[in-house]
Image (cartoon, rainbow, N blue to C red; front, side, top):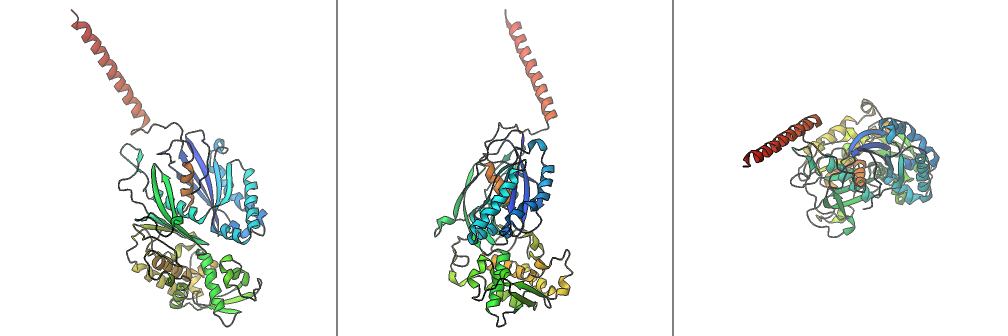
Length: 463
């Protein structure tokens, strides 16, 4: 896959900024790494993270000039975190994901204007901005896989001499990234990819090359999936002005416009002939966990795979999964994580089912829902939908059972450091500098005494 070529920088410590422009929000990450590298890849650490206020940049398609204002608060904090004398040499990059990929397909000129507005803003900043671009679903999956394995120590580990080397065994961890508009799966398969060579990517890190299977499912992010769910409810309803939603809490009532449901590229095929963007649709929740689970299941086409082992859903080729997996899902969905940690795909997570059922039962009423700390209506009303959707995706789609939280941006920065020439290696000492200096003086003295003693022996041995 493609990487950006960055130039070398001066100093013992380098800084980098990555803006993860997702479909629902933008997050700013600050990373630092030493000028030297381990087998041609930087050892990167995240030092700061800031969530940009407002929605994702793809929502500014009709007003692209308003995007830069949302960055101001976070960028001011970033300036304080990075030494002022290193601002000019600090690399910065914005990578937009599925939300902007959809906007580009729907309105390419609007997508270009949004990116141009961001480019103009960062040109006035003190950092070395290398561009705002829309990364592919494949790249997003690869970066998430790199991040997961880096954080789990699968690439490097410290030895007794305080240096880093690849761990024994060479096992890696698979990664699934569930965003707002798309879902990515990435892992190293046991066998070579058969049906789809396009889903195979070679990644070189720390002197090793990994053959990675990765696939991006457009429109299978949580937010877009719920829009498709609501569109199907509309299609199957006899009363188009009022929909019954089994996933919303009982007694919960809200109003959405047709544009909210059908304005997306993901629901374009389900758009009614009488589409009116401003037409208001009332939705009433019934709090029915069983019916909710059945309706959510219908969002996936498992039948087209005909029980083939090398097929996930919707007829997409996928080699047999192996090893452990970690899953990144939206931070706003922390409450609905039915399982935490990492587990082998073959294990059956009974706790997942129990957790989801209890969650949906507890939130059957809007009055109970408002007991949630930091109540956010938009996300809280969809807890039951989110729980069932993630369950079907992981268990029925990928045969996964557990999840944890990661992000693609660290993997992106690690990948970029591949292209930064390393400076003269800094000596890695297995002891503190003062102790090392003392030892050097001691051994130098011993060597000098030995030399004097040898000269003395030569002199006394002469006749």
